[in-house]
Image (cartoon, rainbow, N blue to C red; front, side, top):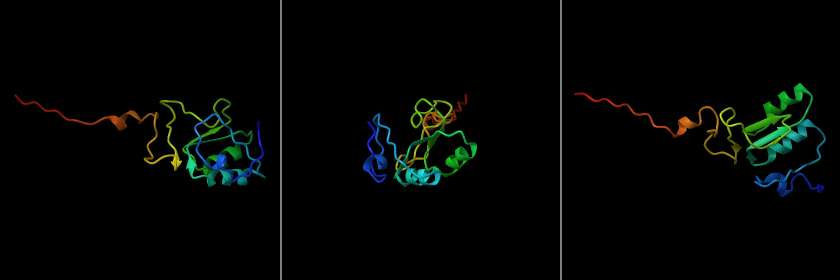
Length: 118
């Protein structure tokens, strides 16, 4: 059930790890981006559009660590391990290091030189 809620309602402002999709009515792309960026969290975000210029504007202005355009499955959640890092912005991330990306494993490695002289 979709219920009309004001855009400042808690459900739009929190980072909920539950299967809920919050849908808010806005007047256009600029307001949609502004409302999304108003939240203190920025883990994932997604957009559906056929307009290339809207995708470019969205990616340039959205404050989120993992961003998608026109991804029909899991439009705003998940990442492709080994290909796309998974890290949030703002309150969704503290290190700036993305998990699961191509450089992820090296964060857990230690360098060591060994020399044995006989």
